[in-house]
Structure formats: C-alpha cells, structure tokens
Amino acid sequence: MEKNEQHGFIIQTQVKYLADQSDEAADRFVFSYTISITNLGTQAAKLISRHWVITDAFNHVQEVRGQGVVGEQPLLQPKQSFEYTSGTVLATQVGTMRGSYQMQGADGADFDVDIPEFVLSVPRVLH
Image 1: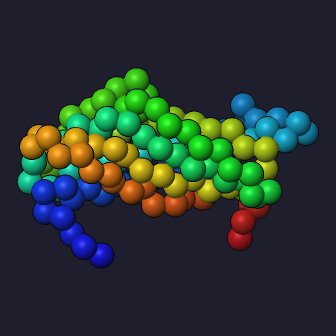
Image 2: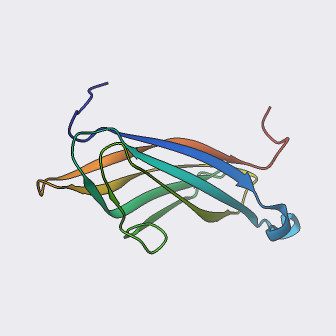
C-alpha cells in the first residue's frame, strides 16, 4: 500500500446494534457506527464530503452522499483525530458499509480517503 506522507489518514470503525430501536418482525435493523479519522500526514486537511455504499444481505445497495459528517466539515491538523457517531438502518440482520471521504488539503489539493469495508451484524448472527 502506498503511503502518502502529506495525506496519511487512518480510519477506525466501531459498530453497535441498537436492539431498542430495531423491529426485527418488521425487518428493521438499526446500527450505530463510530468513526475515528486520524491525520498522520504532514499538513492539515478539511473533510468536505462523504460517500457511503451500504449493502444488505439481499445485496440491496444504498449510496449516500453528503456534505461533511454529522453537520460538520472538520479541519484535521497533523496528528489530530476527529471522532463521530452516526447510524444506518438495514432490512436484514447483516450488511456492510464502505466508502470514502472527500478531503481538501491546506495546499488546496483535493483527495479521497478510503473508508475500509466494515460489517454491520446483529449479535450472534455471524460466528
């Protein structure tokens, strides 16, 4: 994997199944996810927008695009992290999310940061 010293970002994810907001009989499975974005590069960069690809167990794909994250367009200085929590609803007990953040460096250069795929799963469904 190529490491870009100027734009070195690490994305970490944590998923929770929200049983109290879900309705399994109605095929409504609600998940929260917490994302931590850390700037390991040498210059500041602003998160401009996001693109998500959400796939359920029936291979139904939702694409979500929007400005910033949770109403913010954070500016991450070198060695700084930004963490936020959001959520999604699936019609199946298992699915995946992946995507990218569209960033703008302090030098004005636009670049993407990939968000590696992570699994959304009701506890005890996947072994």
